[in-house]
Amino acid sequence: MSKIYFYTPTKISYLDLVSIGGSDKEGDESTIGQFHTGLKNAIAMFMRNGVEITFNVYSSGSLTTFTPEVFTKECKETGKSKELIGFRKNNSEFIESTVSPRLGFDWEPWMAVREIYANMVDEGGYYDEIRRDVVEGTEIIIDFSKNTQFQEIWDNRDLYFNEKEPAFKLGDVDILDNPEGYLKIYKRDILVYSDRNRKSKYAYNIYFGDLDDRRTLRDMSQEMHRILRTIATTDNLEFISSVISVTAFEDTLNDFSFYSTISPEFKEALETFSDENDGEVHTYSPILSSLRGREDCKLKGRKIRTLSDAIWSTSREVVVEMTNKQVEEAPREKSIKERFLEKYNFNIECDIIQGEIHGSECVADKYNKVIILSENFDIEKDFYKFVIQYLDLTETGNIVDNLAKTIEKLVRKL
Image 1 (cartoon, rainbow, N blue to C red):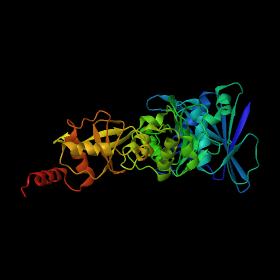
Image 2: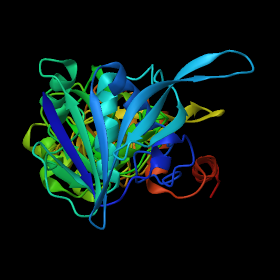
Image 3: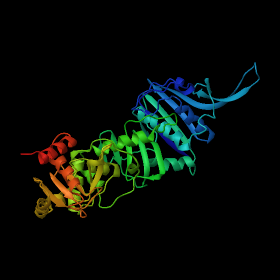
Image 4: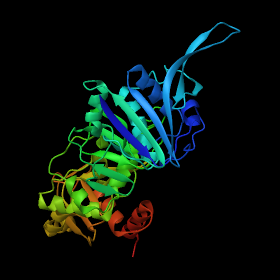
């Protein structure tokens, strides 16, 4: 037999054993148990599987023991009978309850162990595999046979309870090493969500999140968004370095959208890595996509929102397949300006470079104050597009007004 001892400085009441609902923890997001049903579920699960559980309450030198027993309750009026769980005290007194031994029929065996463990965490206690002397508080003993699923659960408890120091601490999210490689989310070190079909570089221990009565996350998607925001806004350079690579990696966080800021440290690390690796850089794809949409992005593949060629569609996206360093180092095409002046009476007062862009033949890069021409830019067919980008780069205000003013200058008689 294996015995595990759980100790808490608080004292459990027989009312906690025989009643359902009315938890003192209700609404407290920092705790695991909030429904006042889990302990009864766990007791019923243990009893159905031959696991003995005992509650010892120590108070001022005295000991009160509660041991669950199944008894049959009969209704004289209807003749109906039902098995229920009661508790035998060490003075032989028996306390009845209305709790069924079938409670928690949809629980998995590990959840019963989790309930005792989570209560210990909530109450600031500890566990041991040898018995300790107790003066005040509660001792809960679970006793199960070796070579059973409960022994296997306990031997592999690191899958259900996080007892390791986090690899990184990011605010209210602990980043945990994850050798199993699938998604695991813990709340206050208790597993509250797992999915073996979702790959995850790290596991996460969170200090927030709404749980259902099975002690699992009520809305996994919502909490993953919050984890992603925490990661994107971190200034922990060691962690940031661990999630930046030359090649893309598959991770469940890639499946979630991102509408938040990115820390200056994360942005700079991505851009530095990109410059050092000929423009190649990868991290969680929502973070990378969000950064590429920013005006001050310096990455290859950054997206510039430019004016559309349709009046009812105000803008479109142009992808620049050049790093900011490549833009800065690209030769300024003076010959293009000269060719423009040969054909058009249009004074150009900005730098022009050629580069790889998609979505348009030219685009105004306002961050670098330059116009980028694609390789297939045609000086005759595409000049009107250049004019729009030039005015968008060099003028302020409404583009239509600026175009009208430019035309006015050209047609005005001296």
